[in-house]
View 1 (cartoon, rainbow, N blue to C red):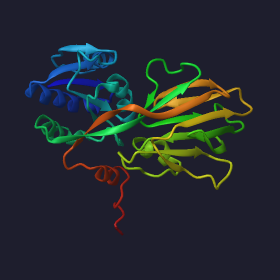
View 2: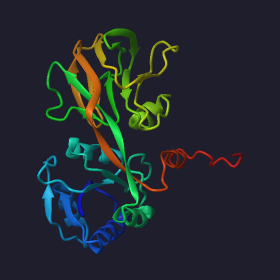
View 3: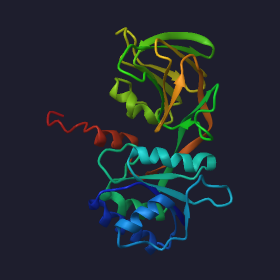
Length: 293
């Protein structure tokens, strides 16, 4: 197995966990490819450095693909890993080096069992929808896709922004708010959830539009089919605002036309047998921890 490792900095208490992780890869004769900045970090901070076949710092090419990508960190790290995988259909495994993670859902304690299941092919892959974002200017260079959400947000603490939304060319609503989120089912457990948005099961073929601090209390999140095209136009007193796709943020001039639709490819995530989406949300959101349940 050719295993690509993508990660970021971690605390000292994760060193022994990472060492054991690499030990298991070696025992299973995995060919290891590591993200170059991550390799430099572990070279300085860890004593057990694995034998590495090669390093990478750019998106994977079709003639040099790994069999699987291990994202080591949190959900933000996982989202960054997507920009290296893109439309190659290489599955991504999320290993959590911190606390809470819906995408990075394999805890430190679960790593040995999870790796055993992966090497024994006891896992399934799930397709996750992405959002494609197009604007008048090329704000996001060569990768304008979001796995979690697209967000427009005011830049300062002053007046709200005005956000007009059109669905398949039909006017939906004008939101007077601090911002607006368009989330995928994957992103329904992220920013949208903290604002009262619903949890949507992956594979539901939906988008969620969730306003951020709307002026009108009757304005609520709405769920739409993901084959709809969404157009957003932002106006207001300020001359510009923030546009974010997952962890990327840029400053955009007001009245910029933003077109959003489902991407024509999907990201494959790895789920270990016996660990379902419902298991994950019960665990992460602590459902049932109340003794009255």
